[in-house]
Image (cartoon, rainbow, N blue to C red; front, side, top):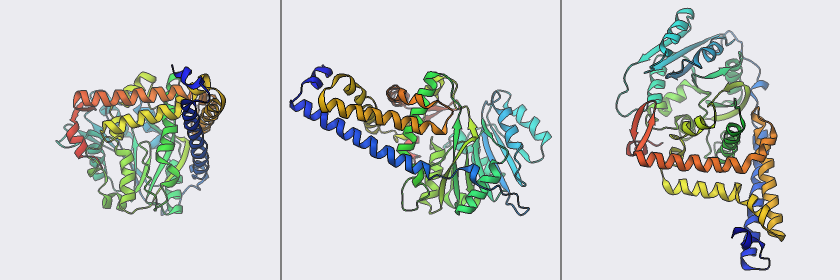
Length: 396
């Protein structure tokens, strides 16, 4: 039926599809150019001169770990190996049921600059991760704070370059775009489309513009000036916000502090999820939250993804005349833009050809997240259930 509608030239429907595909092609070209120029302007962490001065400010690296026994040892070794002259690590064991506490305390006994906090209970009105990060902050002493995750690997000079870059740019908050280790066709297809959506949806190059409402917060690495963190309310204001990493970036902007984004590439890397099934399960709590638990917004996001990322490929196959030409331009621009945005990962640019498959996976994951959240009446995170009404009240 779709093909018959598109194949009928000189009809009203053909004119409609020609106009629609022309609009989609124009949007892809314009946004692709904007994203390419914007991302190219972001500073690279590797270009910042390391800060080794004896007067270097104390940095507190804070992370929360819950049942991270498999990934924790390798990650924490990279934190302890930092060449920065003055730093401490505050590791928070958030109600772990595996060997995470034993691993942390073993490292603590061997390293004077590592402090471990054990949390046994979660108070009402808190999500586990924000509560753990606040507990870590309260035991920290650094002039600068780094919030990260328990599975992130740092190059030895990350801290020394990050604080130097923040001082150079006069930023109070710095998020680093990390490298995500991806393996297997479907995992790369899903995550690379997510990356493209992140770039288009958040426009990271505008985060440092105080006149822009754009903001960015990356869970793998956020460097925050302590005074700015305290003045903004920090994770206390994010106590019931599932996407607390992004919202910390928002707090910095709305509180009047200077925020910026830089590219870390492989200097900060993480194996986010293992396999596409774990990717799908891992975003169940997040994706509907990103739509503010609003079903209409979720449906609009799905329609937009299908229109921009799937429909042109159908038009290329079934349309004729100018409709097919514009559909081809739109599909080509989407593939090229997708391939260009993979530059921050280890995936081959040829994965740009998986663009429509990635879009369909995205739509499935968002629909699944919305249905699961509404069906349960909330989300389950770190083995704790949170009602949707409380989550909506806690949105920042």
